[in-house]
Image (cartoon, rainbow, N blue to C red; front, side, top):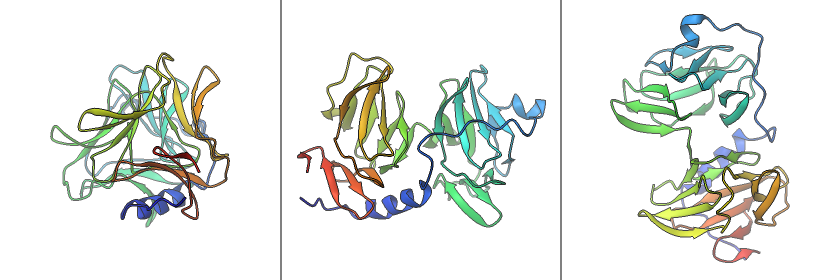
Amino acid sequence: MKIKLIVGAAAALAAAGAAAVAVPSLAAPSTATPVAAAQATSSVLKSGQTLKAGRSLHSPDGRYKLIMQTDGNLVVYKKSKAIWSSHTWVKGSSATMRTNGDLVVAKGSHQYWRSHTDGDKGAYLKLQNDGNAVVYKGKTALWSSYQWISTLSNGVTLYPYQKVVSQNGAWQLRQEPGGDLALYSGGKLRWHTGTSGHKGATTTMQADGNLVVRAGGKALWSTHTWHKSTWLAVQNDGNVVVYTGHMQALWDRYHGHH
């Protein structure tokens, strides 16, 4: 069975594919470059400022760290555990909060990741006490590390409260803290994996192509899609689909495994 990929999701999927050639896990923090004391205590990256390799932001309570690693990956850590990554392994890259409002990981003129918040001049990045890295314009949140737009790339994990949001903003696939992977629209539950009761469970789009909800090392639910180069799409029509790199649907929330 073939599922129609909604216009816009295909482009996002292709973009996600370019970013995720990678390593199926978040890279360990680099210890090569010491962080200056003034930089280490800051939780905000202001408009026009750059986070160079080895530099970091810390949440006000000190529990979380956002580090621009020397391997080129921008990562949010809770102690030693990575909870979000830009998946950009290009040495020498830096993260800049550009004056046009876009948060960008780049090396020279080459961009490897961006928050797509350009057009909001004066926006800034803040690492909060809940571990969420947020781009704000005034008090309005424009982007959050707790969400991915349209797709979940191969090798990426959703931790509690993190989500994938459709491009039109109408659908949210959220990792619930109680263990469920749940799809919402208009504030109403539309679909879920039935894995509640497992506090702290995570969902991973594994490198082997299988989307798995896991808790304590035990698989609770999966799409049974073992195929290389797969991606998860949350579409504007509300369907959740696991696609191959050639846009073949392997699983969707209406029909299950194809």
